[in-house]
Length: 474
Ligand code: SF4
Image 1 (tube, protein in one colour):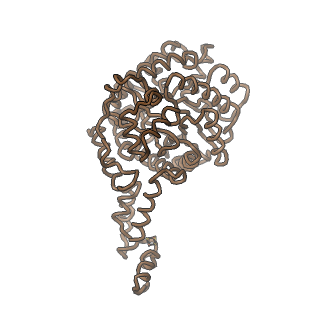
Image 2 (tube, rainbow, N blue to C red):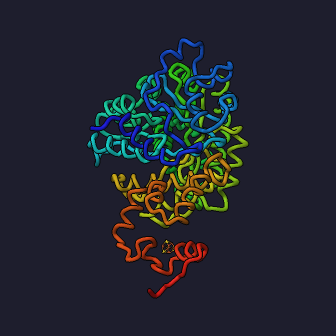
């Protein structure tokens, strides 16, 4: 079994072929970052440090990776516009910053389920995800020995780790939903923090008031967020207030202790384009804005989760509303899927929406695989989903003018003009697939490809501009 550090080093060495730009990985430390000494430096969270004017080692690493001044990054962290999910107990973490002024990051959801319980299979998906460049992994395990798997991740995986404690509470307590107590929900949150989880999705925007509003204003797909539907059900079954909303200050205490970033979940994210931007979604967003303020007052870092399914023409406005209501907190979008009719191809519907969302201000894209709405993704589905999300993230970075982003494309164009196939493969976002396609096509004309053969415009332009003959029929 390869370790996370092995995979990470390999991923970096591959991406490092694009040298000479802000995307250069070579030279960046890929060894585990130890945070222990940071706690003796007199701050609680990265946000607290930033507000005290302290530059942490994580900020230095991230600033070098992003190609920006560390002081500029510190100010963004202090203002909450960049978060650095970095639990003090995740000692092998390679930190990344998440915020719209930075390169767009992607998250990969993995984890065991009742039907797919093999920990080694899930761990191999994690390592593949890191190898392909995913900056974050969410462990959404909902069956079996979830704590062992989670602890293996925080011990071996250098990616940012996220969880949804609501799912895990059901597995951990192994009793009916209605019998889980308010206290037990909070205890699971604390356990994940202790285990080294960097960010946690908490569905605290669906309180009794927003739940009532949801019931009053019918929508086609009801609540499709798994955590949101569980919390709504628990409130309906017990008649109690959402414990994550009611005891939010206690969550903030835990977040301060371990430096956990809160990912404020959107229980009412639209599950079909007809529900996009409806009253439930917007009302919940307003609650999330208030909770963001309360977290920032305690120096706790926050991300806001967003849609979901949403038509193309609503995405930009939705990003702007979030940005206003949540005062520029990093926006973490789940898609958005721009149409509902493409099961088997939702990595494409998600990448279209993700590119537009990120170009309009979202900072963090949750990948979508071809298996979305159909099954737990296989290793191949994970691969396809990650590549689609990476393309969306990069396309957005070009549009946003992130320094160095377009240089990658320029290098590829140069390699294409020179018909330098090896260089094209090196630069490809999925080199394996690019190599395989060329190998399997077996072109007769070795400098061009089977699409145009000797009518290759690139080859013929190179020749004629060099004063050579262009003989198509030879
Ligand atoms: S043959 Fe056509 S598709 Fe292939 S490299 Fe040349 S111009 Fe491009």
